[in-house]
Picture 1 (cartoon, rainbow, N blue to C red):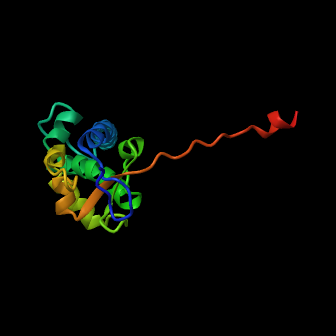
Picture 2: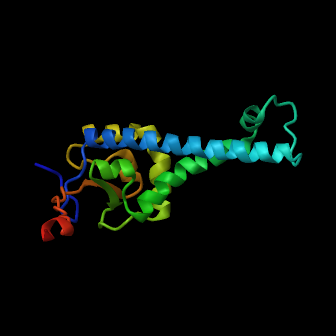
Picture 3: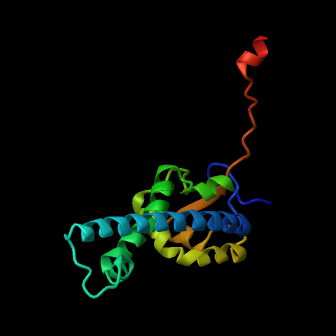
Length: 169
């Protein structure tokens, strides 16, 4: 029997969470690569205009690797991906593909604080292993820590879109 949330949706199991995690990992890595490319481009432009010096670095990439702000910038972009989607819609793109939604226990969207707690306690997805052992509640470590739950949304019925010009002939 499925464990139901307060709004009647079943809670997500381990393998569905894992599928969404893999999707989102690929998306967030692409986002971090794009953010890195933007930082390289801006730094190269500033260096070509003699507005910054690369110091002892042989190129822009080596210069950025030696800068603490660059690591925080990339980490911030990674975190912003999850916080934005969880707070605004309760779903990342990977979660949407797997029909998952993260929500407060009463069904509302997470607050920014809950998103940050969830993100910091997720421990690179390892917190989801608790779902295997917590069969009674189907909640992961990050679910407990952020007072949230991950639910499976129902399948939406497909709607047939008919081309009006084809039906008029």
